[in-house]
Length: 266
Image 1: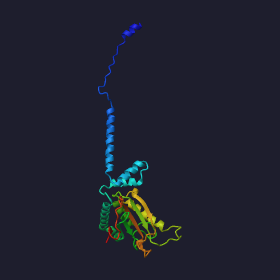
Image 2: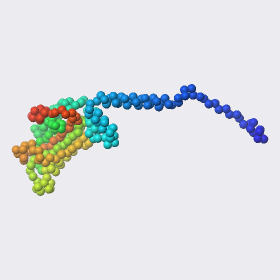
Image 3: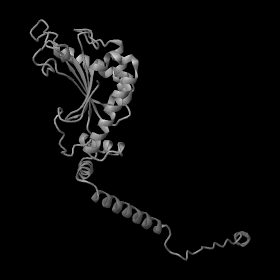
Image 4: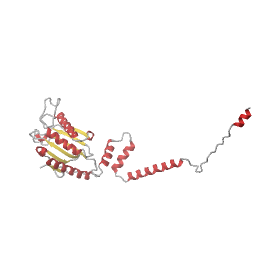
């Protein structure tokens, strides 16, 4: 019986196809390695052709990729988000153009007629400085407070909309006159007031579209840097300074403010 069952079972024949190439998928791995090596070569050649600042920024990344230095990050972001500017001299030209255009825009807007003589735009060591200088009429802040007047707030919003188009970092400074508060500096003082005014200006700039992340410092100088040292109580000492910082720092010297690069609304 067992012999009959074995005779009735079908015979199965398996055919195995042999590969003629003999390499399988190994060539894909080799090709991928070749492409990777070529890409690395091109990156090295590109870096070798860059200036010292780019090399330093790239090196700082590979030395510490997780805690990539803020200096290197800001340099690379600024370098390639502003392709029409390649060095500090070109950036100075761009700042001059910006200052001239800003002044022209203010002149064409009748809303700011009363404020025109109180706005100065100058090129300084850190970058382009836009300064709003108060008057005896308290055009920007009610004396002793950090509350912006409506026209001053709209002026700052307009400036913020212009600066929002630039990649540069922003610093806002507050300055007061020398009128003292009671308490000999132990209570509320001009330091608090100047800082609060700078922050009020910062918020107005943001309302105009300038991103919060672009502000790197808010400074309150009280009366330590008087504009009119002969009259510490003069209204011109009460001012807000907005500084658009240079992206580049290639040791190009800028001439003193009184000699060049001064924009003043007439």
